Length: 486
Ligand code: UTP
Image: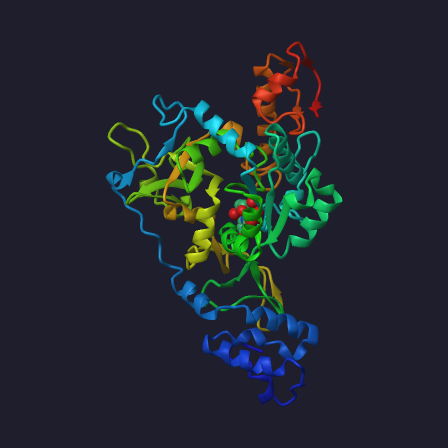
């Protein structure tokens, strides 16, 4: 079949075979044709019943009208002011603020109270495809421990266990996967005895998907002759997934009022950070977001911007350089706060938004997406050929009644694993080196000697804060060879 000869419905074709799917096929064909998408049936006659079922099932779920509109709007750039005075100062708690609205001690006390009450849950988003890393399993299974080779799942889930133990409570974790990673993730967690979690404390749920389309034509891409190229709908898919998988009901039954959000790729994160949770509840915030002070105006992180009184995060790729470089009269950077993708959400805010909102907006990613062409050949494009549609969870910030930020130290908080070994940034080597630098700093602060060039790894089951390390180690200890504290 060529581009110029679109397929006809099978009933019009000379050698069509009848199948239980035939009626459905006819209806769908006409529906797809209204949107110029009937090419996805190009291989129908070659498919067996199971393959036909799969294709029909996928097509039935599509909202072609929305996809068409998304494609038509894909060139619209978000509008961002260019005058420094159009940006407000974000509300919240910067490091070294001489007169904070609440002191860190007050925040810690408030955070401890909600943690001890069992009112905090953790949501861990782990549904991404991890395409840059190029690992053939869910990213959470990546062995990142510098000496232990502990996986990202093990490190993050053990940190949650440590928090629960510290406050004499339980902290349920809601793990978001995508259809492609769900089974392997569940199997991995079960094989590892859920890392000590009771079954009711680990809620694994699946996000939705969106089809990819051709960048030039908006036509749906096929990944095989009988399936669309589908990808997870972004970490923002969390909102509707929490709603329709019953996770919100689970939180309600468990009395979970605040949700600490983290991503699977950052093993450094201070999980369920007591001070951040405290600032959040003391401020009556619907949303709190942790930020780092950018070391360069053009650093490739999302930027917190306050426009018309609304706090929002603007992706660096959507931000013109001249806006990223804007300064106030005193010389300080206007967009100084970089997103580290760690947030605290008020559960009732999330629930209300999921129930009433038409949905978070979609963002566009231009990607190299392998596809099946009209001749049935699988093409591996050398240049971006496809558009993916993704929702971002931080787009909830502007709707929060009160959105605050809490500045954190990047050395203690942020080491995302994005790229494969050998890449200049965000590689396994970079993440491991940040982990060992932090663990060394904790030990040295406790008076312990760590010889030059020695790698120390502190497992979260031993300690996961500087204070815990100081309480547990003997300051006369000397590490002269690599060592795991467990
Ligand atoms: P990224 O946007 O960095 O994507 O996700 P990724 O899948 O890890 O990597 P690339 O871009 O394909 O190389 C940031 C976080 O959001 C989660 C990821 O699992 C990661 O924790 N995420 C992303 C989802 O849970 N679902 C998605 O649809 C996208």
